[in-house]
Amino acid sequence: MSRTVRIAAVASAALSMVALAAPSQAASTTGALMITHVRPNASGADVSGTTQLNLNGEYFVIKNVTSRTVNTSGYIPDLTTNTYGRALPTYYLPAGAKAYVHTGSGRNYRDSSGNHHIYRGYARHIMPNTSTAKNPDLRLKKPGNRDDNTSTGSISTCNWNTAANGTTYGC
Image 1 (cartoon, rainbow, N blue to C red):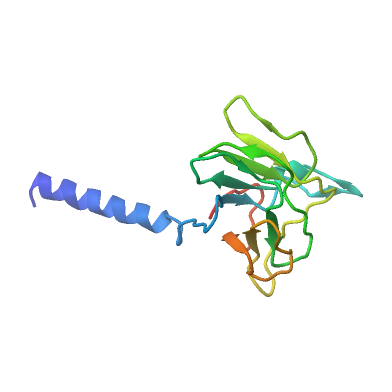
Image 2 (image 1 turned 180 degrees about the horizontal axis):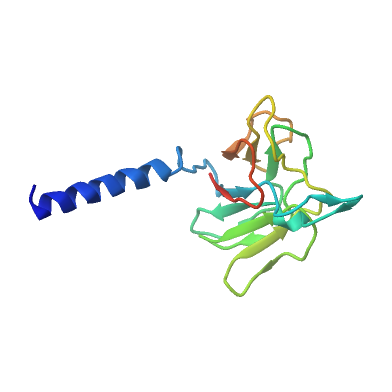
């Protein structure tokens, strides 16, 4: 086998391995915002005694896929495994920008790297770390829809099975 053929075979095999590691479905949206990543299990323990730890280490990432600024107010993150409905607060996300939507409290802002941070204000972890009867599914719904565990009004979704400690999953 010639050197050129061997190099082509190795390159082809390497590309095949990369393809296997890629997510099985690409993120998609039918609206202005798209869920691109989720970290349902913050690094470390969730609680110590009665104290919630690292609430803001639990988050999901949304991206504005339009060419205009979008107000996140009223968009509903709906988890199929619970009914902890709380609409996103008012935040003006620029065209093409992404925002980390944290579970806990904080001041909504843009950091020095250009990433935006939005806080939902929960006092405890809300995203499931393990799957029992079904895979957890996070849906982002258009304003005016309900957190009712149905797909009605969904514009983007992301799901995971058992969430490894501190792992971020692509959607």
